[in-house]
Image (cartoon, rainbow, N blue to C red; front, side, top):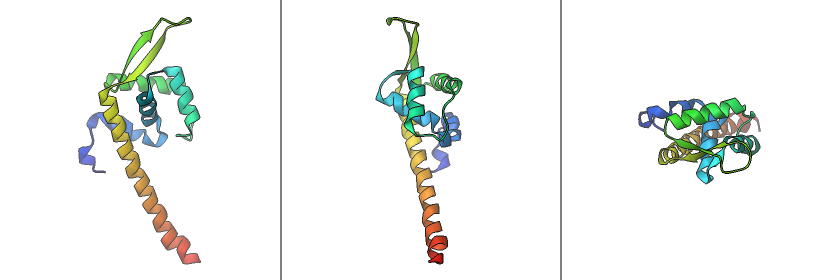
Length: 127
């Protein structure tokens, strides 16, 4: 992937790609609108990351994604119990998700190239 095509608004996504937090949140929201607590549960159950997400980190990223126009939120008060904020993916969020997929594919390609080289030169040389 060429860096000159990178949207400068997505810099924080690139920096968090290894943890898969932002791509995962975008992916979950592409399936349907969700509340923060539900997103925390989905992320922790997904197996997409080696670390469990801290709720404060999830909410901080959701706020940042909303500031950047990737998601919108609204308070839902029609249910029994306390009001909850529902998050919905925007068209810009769909574009950011596609960008994440491009970054992930690029990373997977580089990791596969490394493994192929290792298997050919190191592991293959021992047998």
